[in-house]
Length: 385
Image 1 (cartoon, rainbow, N blue to C red):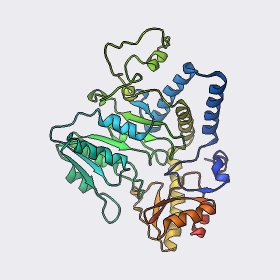
Image 2: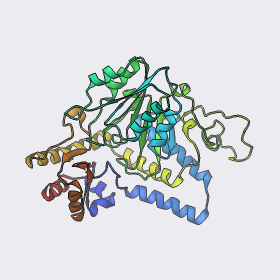
Image 3: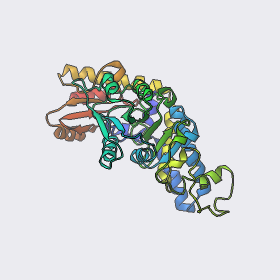
């Protein structure tokens, strides 16, 4: 990877030291050009479904490549919350069941499950809290997951402290009790390699506007093909049925050449059963370009660069006696480093005035460099601190 070329392809690098990829990642020229081309086509010719629909299908295929899955296992949704709701409304719950989650999850991956308890769909939601080191130990998962556990839902990486979760180990525990495992990879995919099959998760959700550097309004849902038929969608739209316009375009049929069968609702045989209404095509076009751009680079090499840059940051913070809140064990590292700050909002504003972008959090600053960042940019941040 030639980092000088990469940085020329990401315009923000010429304007500021950008360290908020855990918030929103900056787009590459590839993404901007794809969106511009779509907008120009829409402006000049109006609707062009015959060309847009294959791009939507291909975006699913690209996401499948990112996580080692087949296109039939991928659905396109507008955001991660929609993907989680699609799963939550489809999983058959055990009688008198419980759901196990982590306090390190993003709020959506917590609130959703509390509501299931309030609605009486499950008896208990077991919220596991991190210990003094910022980690939920494996033995806590082992104690919480039992034969009555219907769902285990966790994040690959915590948005709060950057802790990387032991997905494979937790999945193994959950499957010993026949629980369905959902993993949110929003803060992992694009940082380090992820293979959904090797991690043995049943469902995986991810958006593209953070570490994948795509636009808002596009996300993907993976469901292992062996679990698809166990799931019965609680709702469905005109794109989620077996005879959909996307299915017709793959068969090279006239999209509206024959009426849709409205006498019944037959969910699609693949993961598209979880898709509802029409997509935000402009977002999908941008997502497709972002995925293609990410796949140009070796994912392990990207992660090595992220570790190199964050190592430099951590060393500098230690020299300044800053208290680091992120677990620093090698197997828990991600792209996020969080440290204490007495007045994070003031620090955020001061850094912003110096063209340095970080995130202000509760009594802390979150720094989330990516593979395109440099040690020189980290030095600029440390000097400003």
